[in-house]
Amino acid sequence: MARSKFNAKATVVDGIRFDSQAEARRYGQLQALQAAGAISGNCYSQE
View 1 (cartoon, helix red, strand yellow):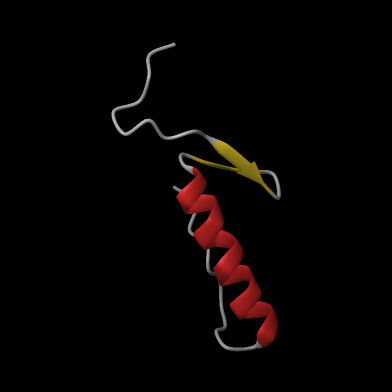
View 2 (view 1 turned 60 degrees about the vertical axis):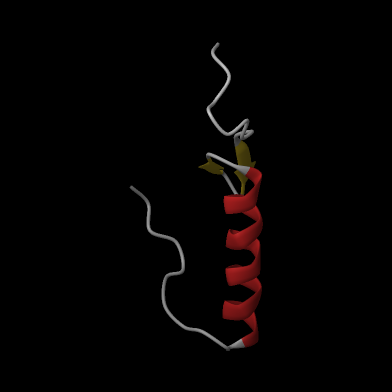
């Protein structure tokens, strides 16, 4: 398997595969904001 251009490591959170750990971390932040009521709606758009 070839190394990615930015050396990103794929990460799985809540059964969702993210291309990088930074994306997964941001998803966790958005989930926390949604749970606190600071934002509403779907914070994840699956491509």
